[in-house]
Image 1 (tube, rainbow, N blue to C red):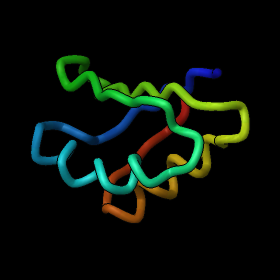
Image 2 (cartoon, rainbow, N blue to C red):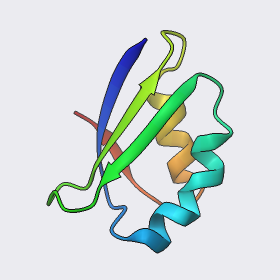
Image 3 (cartoon, rainbow, N blue to C red):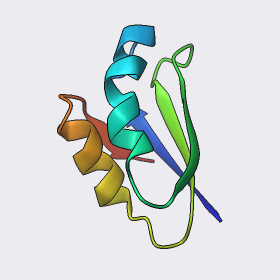
Image 4 (cartoon, rainbow, N blue to C red):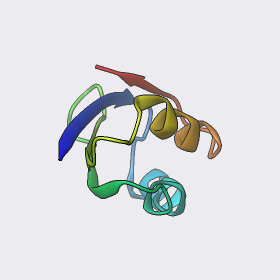
Length: 70
């Protein structure tokens, strides 16, 4: 199991609701959460070793959000 972290523009509960289907449908994600209190809006993804950062970035982009691996 690995942990990926991303700086995002996911700002609120409504944003989280918008990206939930995209992230929940990604194969390899065990759990994920967004720290909206952090100024960088950090998305933390617990995943298997096969999930790539680009898969997460693409899933968020498909919903209109930006993510940058940190």
